[in-house]
Image (cartoon, rainbow, N blue to C red):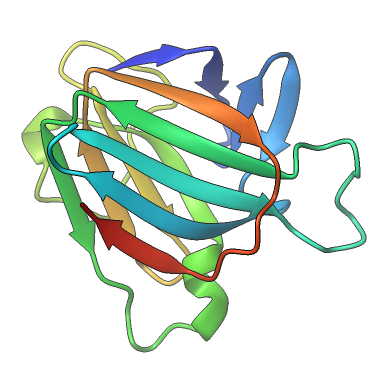
Length: 152
């Protein structure tokens, strides 16, 4: 997977977008999955948290767009976890392609040979694994979105 215009930082919860470090664990809430089957495109949406620790200069919303999706795996959240756990990212990074069935780990913050599947794990144990040609992050205006999953 080729990342365009952003990178994942070593701590596995932050991204670097246009020179700005954005913490997807502490400063953003995950709100929506939108998978367009015919277009082979996945969009993952976050909105800036309302917490008083969040800088107002941070983008109000972010969308991770994966194009050329070849593999999409989603593991449901654990029933034992707190209700807001699906909104809170635990880690983002790359996992070995040979370990597609393992939905629990992240091996690296960088793409390397044989380690190109993007993995996102949330506090609720919700896990998303993506094999795609490329990924971009778009800044956007915040909208009122409740947590949803859309398949088209």
